Length: 27
Image 1: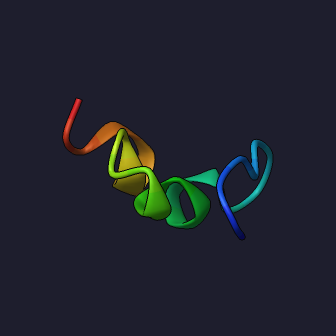
Image 2: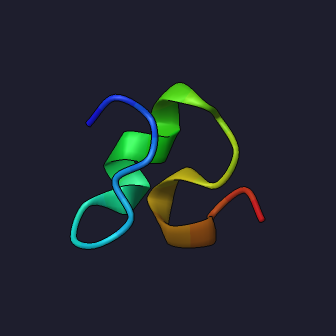
């Protein structure tokens, strides 16, 4: 959960990058 946690909680790990947290909510 630091940046790239592609798998189970990638939505919570990507929050740090503010790219596509929440499973593509901002996308």
